[in-house]
Image (cartoon, rainbow, N blue to C red):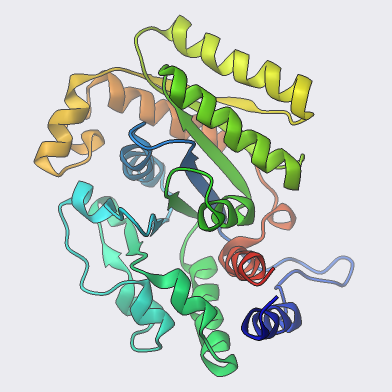
Length: 297
């Protein structure tokens, strides 16, 4: 381990993780952090992220998106909004959390990742503490934070996956997408067999096809990896999705009565029905602390 990484780990380990220690102490408010990821690119992960955010906001929840797909950050493209600042400005202590959050539709806020991971590793103690203080504010401001990761199994992607309270794993009926989704589940199982993973099948031709894919992933994961997956649902192939991308407007807004939009609204209902107690959630601060600990490992 490098001296820099060792120093980072010491700082993170010494931080108060925000979890109450005393019995009977009421836990402070923490946001529900959900990572949306995929084994390969091209499965519609980012489109699902922005539309799910809109569907959740329509249920009265305060939602923020953190775009950590550092190679192809494109939440802003799907919203048709160019962010003025990125996570990099926050890391460099040039802007506050309030300044780097960009206004999206339906009261959603989003934060573009920029090339922030490398900068995180170079932060000194003072900047890191201030950065964590900014991140902790997200717990007070939002109910749900959606993390849009890059695709694949790189260390960066896996760190954001393992740091979240729960994972939505997006796949399609394409054989390579299913194979790569299973490879991701295998990576997760090696680190934490109790991690919450919900399968979302996108671009399926029929409901039966989607159900079959989800069921097969669930069966093989439990049999060979001892990791229990659950089904979140599916979105059937819909031409309006591509039309909305060209319009740079989420399909839940551009085509709210489309099959895809109706499916997303239903998925949001299902997701909210999974009640999580505050004690079970690390929140935004805990999420970033975990990410930093993984980078320092």
